[in-house]
Length: 393
Image 1 (cartoon, rainbow, N blue to C red):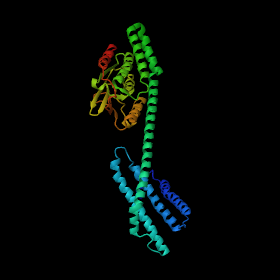
Image 2 (image 1 turned 60 degrees about the vertical axis):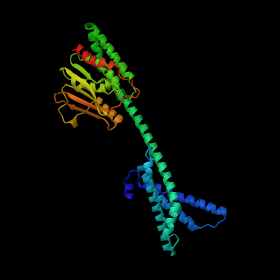
Image 3 (image 1 turned 90 degrees about the horizontal axis):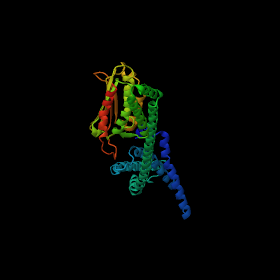
Image 4 (image 1 turned 30 degrees about the vertical axis):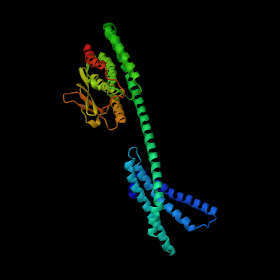
């Protein structure tokens, strides 16, 4: 038992002796109360009674670190109290018995030193233990258990609030970085340069690009602050981004979307797809002249939602995986997924056997509470994206 306490990082020797010091403090208060009562009644002071009362509290104090240790390991939890009580009851009785044996052994040792006998026989010890000591020890065990459980749940609540605050901060920082990348002077310059080149040659295409760029900026700013959005909203944001990029990379970029209508109401992290598709644009389209075809797929596998983004670009650099450095988009996406879902997510980037790359994101499947059924608009979106790509080939 001592080894278990010693191995626990929270139960340092300093903490052990601080907790054990509760017993002597209680013994002092007991003795002061006893002295006050004797003085009030005019009774003579009995030093041996004060001593043994103090020793009894001292032995009880030595059980406090173990009571705290057990309470920390098994705090009272809503819905589990009935199952936890028997375990704590056995420990409380064991601690009380150990305290009683300690008191008896101290009295026996005192008798041996003073040459007396019978101040507290083993039978008397068990009798007092069952008649009064045990009730006191059970009461004190319950108080310690309740206090420790309340402190632990308070710490968990504060940790959850802190984690939520950190998650919101991380989201805000990610959004700032993404918005900064979306509003990057190079991106805006390239879009405006494309528009200026189309104004006289193809006014209708220039007008379309201005509208798409406006839609993209509006959707980017409108979604700021939300932790999760529907897949339908995420695809709408992706469409506005891709329509700008497909005008810029005319004939070099096409995108198909394969998402069943029943999945459009499920929730996904806000700004999930855009940085992943941007990764394709930067590393597959912008680095060469060969046309790149990309596809976004989504499917439900049990209680998981799997989103796949595949392309037929040049693939990953020919180097060991441990030497590859991911960009800001993938790094931020991994961090956000980890904060949102913990171990209940998966993000894998790998080469495709037929060429190009394949990125798979696996999330818990959840539908947004109170979300209305998906309308027919996303079905038009599924048809518009490949069609829009074809217009600029």
